[in-house]
Length: 442
Picture 1 (spheres, rainbow, N blue to C red):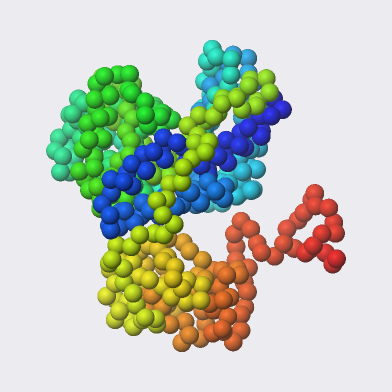
Picture 2: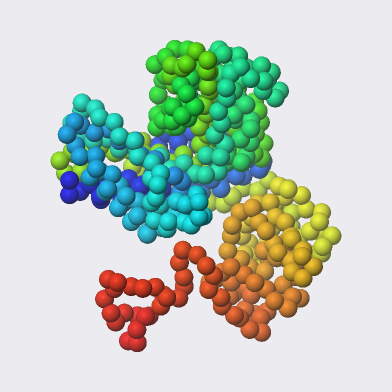
């Protein structure tokens, strides 16, 4: 199968950068339903622009590229060991080229493997079938929404919902509670995979398998089809909205399956997936490994963003910098503050919830959303004027210069620990043809 690695690498790249067609439709419908001039509508607008930029620039949709989970169907006689080896090679290559973030951490030492390989990474499930082609499905599910997975053992008491018994009404209560407990921490709007029954292990596995289903399919079990529809009809009444900002739309999909269980057990397992629902698949020629068909992919998707500009709500806070400590203390969670400066003039940046940690000797700005500090505004919006400080420490390589160089008497560059380094001379190259710029004199 000489084309297998190229095919799997293409699958990983597309899954990380191109949102599936059915998911695009769901997000678009939600965008039209959301009330204008709300923070949820604003967040959805940013999400839509993000999806467009990821596709156009072949960049990851989300900085957390998730746990690669493969579900593979093979004809009898296909060597699964070869496929698994090629998957590892493709995962490594996708990580090296930035399509995947290094996400595999040794649970004992805390060390990142660097190439998304290690015990349990990636997750690969094989099944044989009687068709002639190979089918490979890939799900990239991030850690934030993975943390909001939940499992219930019925009967149980649920806050605000009461007793959930061993019946479909009890299952319904569990599903609503799963959506409620996720709030914005699962990066809503969300999608659910649910398993009724099984044991604790098979239940979670089956729940995640439901995320490989199309959002447009109809459950072949009438009772479960009715339950899916009931959940979708009522989950939005929770009012959680996009990213937990409150809004008209909270849930974009719910797929439910059932497994037989032990008489003494009744588990309901819920796999929660964020709006960045990255799930694609391919059919491959079993002899060459070449792609014969894409599954779920939007080949020529329409742009998601309704406009190039992010809509304002009318409640943004415009402050003249540098702001006072009193102004900084008056800001509340959810406020949107407009920043100014040589890099950010006219641009609205969303840093999320922000706090200033004051040790007495240093003031540290901590933001919910990571962002390179290009501009004085990352400090001034929090009531700190860097022009009045003796030292300013930034995590930035180049882009800080336009904003910070004019106020500095000296710049000291430091090499921090991490998976890469700006000083290319520190690496032990083994296959590099020398001489080569900038390592050698030219």
